[in-house]
Length: 228
Image 1 (cartoon, one colour):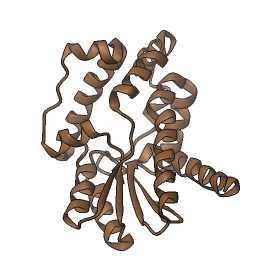
Image 2 (image 1 turned 90 degrees about the vertical axis):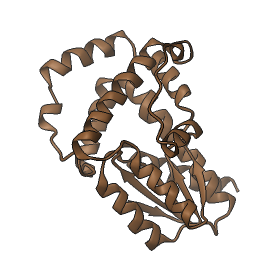
Image 3 (image 1 turned 60 degrees about the horizontal axis):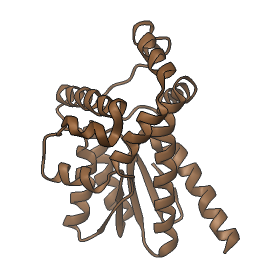
């Protein structure tokens, strides 16, 4: 969790009961007027309706084969992990939204449309990276040393190591799924922060986004101040 001006930014795990409790604590401590979440409109609707993911092959035309396979396999893995810990993936985001609605606070959706992200992933995640990830799944040059309790949010040190490894080893993967979205979400949050500085914003994002997003937010915020 990090605070900057009128923003309280929380990094969460999407399958952690601990994250749900942290959001509740911060909500009551910070008393936000806006709750911002790492969701787009479609994903929010699916969470609120408890809808099962739909992976129609028709989606391939929109997001490409690589993007389609990623969402198919990634969704399966996340659900399996969620079943292990007894938490539905995305529960912490849903909890944040319902907490806002129950207390008559505004909700802001700050993530880009998932179809844009998956199209970018199909474009940037090339053959060389696919080959690397295939080899790494068997050799495990890094992941074997990175152990953490999936019921909890990983430590900042573990996240930093994992993000650094991903950025160097799979730059296209990192750019499409993390880097570009960090920029997008940071820009949305800075807009909210500057639009009305009396607003108190509680933003909930995945733990892998928190550090870099806050760095971007600080730079963009100060740049706007200098220009203004």
